[in-house]
Length: 197
Image (cartoon, rainbow, N blue to C red; front, side, top):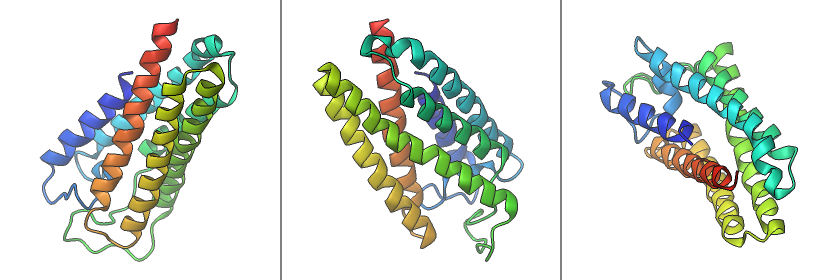
């Protein structure tokens, strides 16, 4: 329950403290660049470890719903993606805002991008796996909330990814909104499952 709020609070504070950092345009990952980059790197890694612990806890928590292999597995992948994104930082694309983007990303940045996909794709999928689990158990409110979150999260991912590819002015804002949508849902689902234990 604390992982999502922690991640969001840290990147919001860091983004507000950085000179030449444009929260509307630049990705959260760009906060891992520079002298203070260790803060965002630690944010990725610590929150990834918390999510990995959550993946293990889900085995027990989902017993009330008949259990699930895929949910803990996907959340575990999500956690690995966060940890990897923290270890392998992005290149200097758009950081600071007056720096031209490099034509080719370096290897470390390419690995970061792969781990970022491992962050967003499993979370998108797990929304619908949870939606199915909740529907089968008769928890229709949680079913619809999970399905709508998946739709919004997936649409947000596509929009901000295209925005970053085209150097869009609001790609950073779209990414932040998408991240917050996913993290709020994760935190609320965790609170719901905890209440059932």
